[in-house]
Length: 241
Image (cartoon, rainbow, N blue to C red; front, top):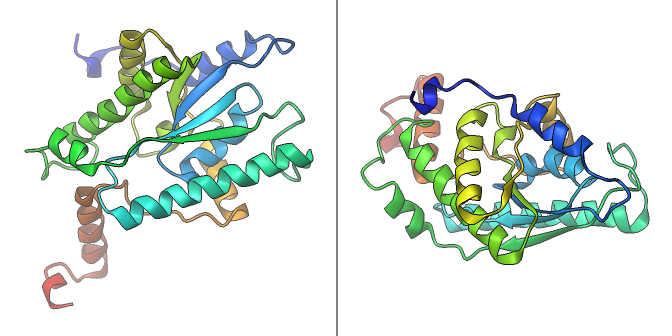
């Protein structure tokens, strides 16, 4: 049976079972949470900070343009600072949070897009969502699991499943395998469910977060630009603009 033929799991239900099993009187477990950007992490952090002491792991060599990388990192840092101010002040406003919410740390891995480009060499022209993306997911989640083991985190996970365009089955299978190899626990999830994606849009509006319109790599950016030109009836005129 191939991975695509395997029975689908309800990863959101699996997450909820884990959360129900946590002892609210005990010290909250630690979670190393891979994040690609502020908007994608917004709801996940709001949700999980009630249960975990989270360190956001910012490892995204797939963002191949330095300026874009720095912009997304700055927005992630700004969001985390705002969330921590809420915890420090004990004021959550219209957030779906309580006094149980924990402060959030961030750990930035070295930025080296050449690692990503080497990983997907020969796949540059594959469509978005295909094997190139699988390689990208594996690269980032493998590093997340390795880092979680190195820092002694209780769990590791990713915010990537918040996107309606991301395959939660594939992401969780990759994450589970990487975590198992590194001897850490994978925290499953499908964060787009239960209106998670809708809430991330609301939070992006509340915090005025920069929302990019492509995944991060130059290949997805080109695909997005081609789609935009086609929609505008300008396909084939880019060289003259």
